Image 1 (cartoon, rainbow, N blue to C red):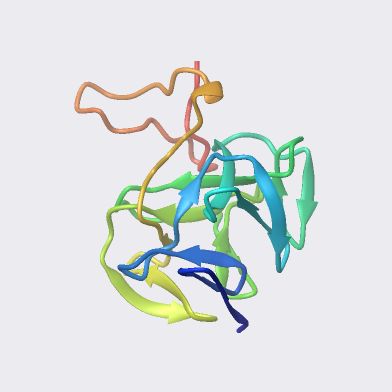
Image 2: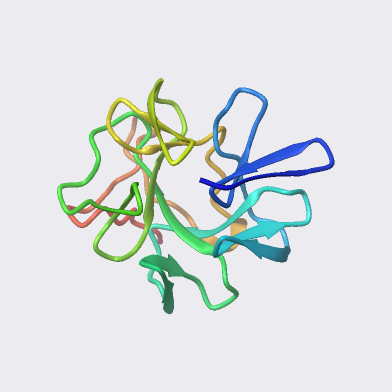
Length: 153
């Protein structure tokens, strides 16, 4: 585990952490990579399309063409059955980092919070506007395939 402080911001294992100890994800312009993870100008961990297809991989992490991380927010639901752990963090078979923006922190791996379902605890769910329209149920839940991919129109 590597910790780094930039101004008032704390980074652990390459992830930006919020004041409440959750990983901060955003869609800003990448200014640097920390332990292989993209960090944007707001010091957030920079993510790309939720549930999208990776064009390259960096140590198992699926990346977009512009170098952002692919992710899947399970919103408190069980993690996909195809989830594997690389370096202590959960990934789908497509290389999407499995996160949970609403689950309670239950434990830590390499200093990064994990929710009770085993996903990385994030402070927010921020799919970029360029992702298209995310298809949801009448209740507003994401429609997720068995492979953990969120349907986007």
